[in-house]
Image (cartoon, rainbow, N blue to C red; front, top):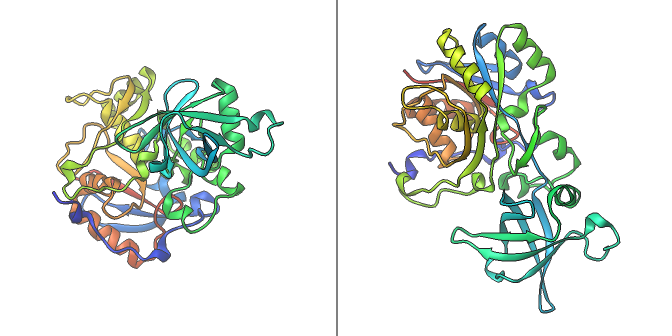
Length: 358
């Protein structure tokens, strides 16, 4: 397969810069197994589920992972920006940094307001201790553990996707908007955006309908924003991300399937993690580790019956995933109709409910 097979034209005006308010007022395109398309709103989601079905949510929490600072190399200064990518130890992070070519091991970086060092949280300094082939650098911070987490939260900003950040600056609204209401474990640098549509009221209505909710954790890395640069799909390498499925959640989801219920993943992160935790014969197992699963057309799904997800970038691994899930012709038609109908795209945009192709 060629990456160009997953190209489509998207008007820039359809890129959402702010979320719908309230969250569940976003539009929902329901794509049937036979390719039928129905236009609804996210608040209508309970109407398309039945008692005994299960929703799987990613409860990762986004950190303020974008930091601006000054590199100091023997008194030579330059402004740098870091997007934290993956926690390595209590004091070390892997990060993407700009300008990457001007950085080398041993450089000191002062993040935050270097002019005011009286504030404890202002002392967010690090040393570059390594550079990787993929453009990442390893930052060794002077702080560690909770002290480092607090300093990052105080000095960092929410790492909005490039297609939003290039058109407006992050602000205080994003600290709430770019976080799910059930976020728990802080380590992600991107939100599981399908979950942004859920409200307490919607969760209560789903429970009243007999739909169970289950929470897994996949810490989304900055690699999710990286474009596919290869010409062929097979040549693309996914960045690994850490995830956990507890034994209790695995057992509960296996019981749902045994009773005839459907497993509906909220977001591609939940789906990728659940598929990583499922054996070849369809048994979901406890999982704790990294996954770099790359789902493209031809993949045989083992666990997920349904997927709720936002609308994705052309040529992206996530558009490839939804084409694998519901069929490429169906998804090309769905996206074409969504564009014609003015659906809002990407992280703050509208949603779709997909059922796995037979």
